[in-house]
Length: 301
Ligand SMILES: Nc1ncnc2c1ncn2[C@@H]1O[C@H](COP(=O)(O)OP(=O)(O)OP(=O)(O)O)[C@@H](O)[C@H]1O
Image (tube, rainbow, N blue to C red):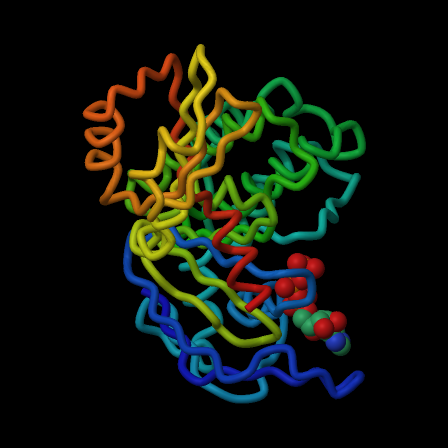
């Protein structure tokens, strides 16, 4: 669906090499997170796909079309939700979306525009201009604009920055729905738990290079030795009680809490050992590795 071959970008200003030989192949219907620190190159890559930034070298193919020679076709295939919010204040929200449809030669799509506004909780704002929208509403309007031509690929550059938790959740539901309908989605975000919740593939870009590209489950599996189990007891335990757990680096905290680190595949073995030794815990907490911890490890390399 989207193929990026040996793409590099050096900005003339400051001679900044923002992308260094990027290779990516994203299939139809994938839901991919593009993660990276400020300045890693995410927006540069998105701007290249959007046709707003000229790559220095490499080939981009979108839906089978070469980006350099088919900009109209590629613009139809992708919808971009940009990071920066810049709406005009002349038209109402509804007019703006009609106008946006017009750029793609789409007419009479009032029902679809209504549905979009409904999904993005903007329906009651359709007769006002963007001036009257809150920051989070302006962001949601960007999503509506990007979707007006029903793109096959939706690329979102930090769509939930500044959006409150409730609306963020409803946006997740909406993105999941689009994914379920077959839309290919690429999401950049600094909320790593958002990527963990939504995406199936994780790409990490660092200083213009891809340093990780894995299915989420596989990536998290690689770090599964970091699963931490906390047992709570209603009596004091001491180190002689837990010698049998030595290989799991046990730590006793405040006499009544035992912490160990295990590989996910060892969980049931450890629980069996604890019960065989007659340790009667009153509470247990399994703290699985979070994508955020893994991400931080990757970028600190
Ligand atoms: N127009 C430009 N001219 C010169 N350098 C630029 C330009 N745009 C971006 N850069 C530089 O390219 C590098 C990558 O920037 P980019 O905006 O792609 O990062 P990003 O990963 O999107 O960061 P953020 O998470 O902060 O949005 C940065 O060093 C940035 O300063």
